[in-house]
Amino acid sequence: MAQSVTTSPDTASHSSASHAWDRFGWSLSREITLLVLGLLAYRTARLFVKDEIDQAFANTQRVIHWERTLGIFNEVDLQSSILPNDALIWGLNRYYFFAHFLGTALWVCWMFIRHHDHYGRIRRVLLGTTFSALTIHILFPLAPPRWFPRMGFVDTLQTYGPKIYDSEAIANTANQIAAMPSLHVGWALIGSWGLIKASSSPRRWLVSLHPAIMIAAVVVTGNHWWLDVFGAAALVALVIAIDAPIQKQLDRRHKPTADTAQCDADEVTDDNSVVAG
Image (cartoon, rainbow, N blue to C red; front, side, top):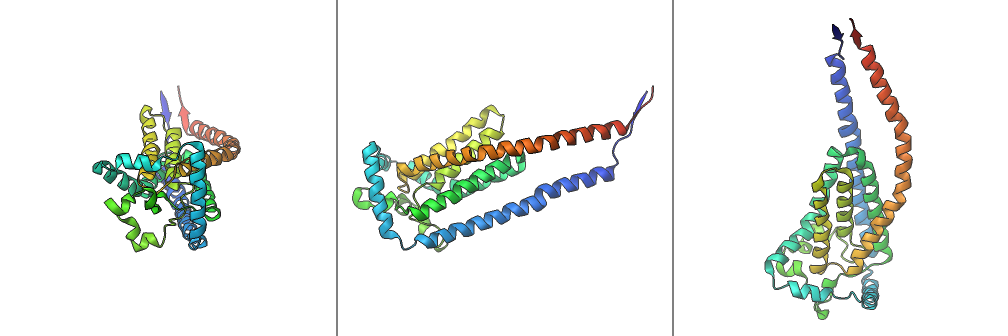
């Protein structure tokens, strides 16, 4: 006959409360602080380039020249081919706006709650990409295609709605000459990469539709050039590559801790189990 002695309810309750505080107390407070600092940095970066309109237009001519050299200067033709489809334009306009901020908030929260073991790396890549992009925005201000109606571009947000840049709150926050690289595409790529990496579900690959649709949205709405998209993809890949050795070092550091914790758990189980036969 075997008899086992289990951990007391008070001890289990204390352990559960401690775990909850570690995850949703200090850790969550830290993430909110980083988010607030990121928003402040974004607004501050805008102040550095608010008067660089001439430079932004000059850089736009450079980008157009580079795209023509590469044979990819076809944004206006692509937009013109889709403009007759009002329903598609309506959907892409709203995807451009809502899926960027709301979509990013949702997948960040999902990673924090459901895949916390992967969250640290996703956070580092997201912040690294964002702050690197803000530096490029300052050094290389770039006007979006929608500012060039003489070239045939249409500002679909202004024409079909929602007119987000008429909002004073957005106008005072958004940097409209920060086309290179596209953070819309960058954040979408990071979210897709993170969710695919963390999940084991066969359906996880469906999240790759998010960056694909976002790429279509930023180009068709006249908010970004193709090179903005490629620049975002290259920047995300670079940040992930730079972060890889950091993650390996963290994995090596945490592995002994995890092994020790498992040994301690086994010892507790042995101590709390009294076997009589």
